[in-house]
Length: 280
Image (cartoon, rainbow, N blue to C red; front, side, top):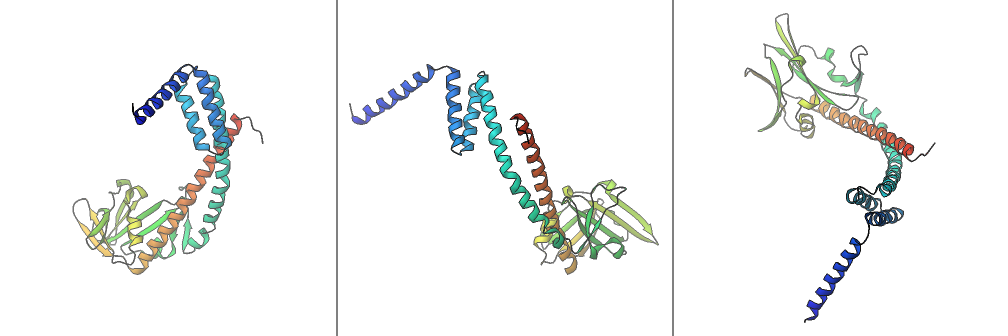
């Protein structure tokens, strides 16, 4: 018999012995061993390893309730410590981002009609509606939560547009069609006026597309459902406004996300403290 073959027999024999040894133990004993391993990992600072051992206890020994209860308690302790570490970090990051808001909004006006709006919006001062009557243009704006909104204003012969196409050479993106409820049109002194409002979910990445290509020649095409269209180009000021609005939208969206994470972590920490009977 070769040494290699003899070694393989020893390994197989050892594995078989270990298998029989484990089979000789009850589920309660095996579950307790896994719990001991979980505690050891936790005390050594290896939280993920501890949670993996706990998952094994729940999946492999569903009837060993006493050990599973101890495993639950250890899980709560780990999760509470994770929440208590994340809360100061989220608070610090949120404060840092909020400190950037005054500079980011210096060229914007905050607009909110308390009668109809729960969430206010930031409009660039240069593109206030009352200062741009009588011309075709796109107005990018963002609400307090960082949702990017786009309003298209058209004045001329009747166009009935519902889609906005943004082109740079042969590359383009276009919005999804506006909802009928978000289209408003009327005729005044022989001129046709049309306004469509497109929320974030209809924009198909157009704000980022314009912001990342603000140095390029950008063509806007207003397309109607019946095939009609009208085109114009964004001027230098309008492209700069898009870039400013996109950056503000991204900042407000990040702040809103951090605030949501903080509130969830805070609520979960309170819940875990109640489960562990930890009083303030």
